[in-house]
Image (tube, rainbow, N blue to C red; front, side, top):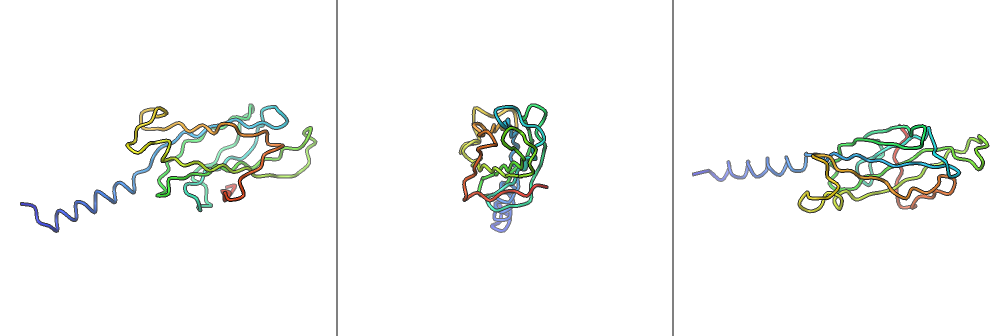
Length: 149
């Protein structure tokens, strides 16, 4: 027969393992400035509602697209994407850096039982759709932005 101490130790270890495991996401999107692809924007992903330090960063490609692979494990099941950009009207090269931030709940992407149609083996695809043209982009004021680096 298993002793109570052994049983409780096993339960604690199992619970810690569940909290430590991370979920892999492929986060992608396309940025536009004045209706054309916007290269060179810095994209940062933070794990959690209050984390400022990015889990991963990337720079948008020549067509404005970005793709990041991130291991996320925050207990509040939220990640944020902050986009640092310098998009000016008619690309007049003015230095006016802006930041656009989106917040996503990844619990809803994974589902209660870990089942989702967006799953690809052990990675979940999480496209950031409907990013506005950066010339008009405004973030929800309740979202905290990730640091740039």
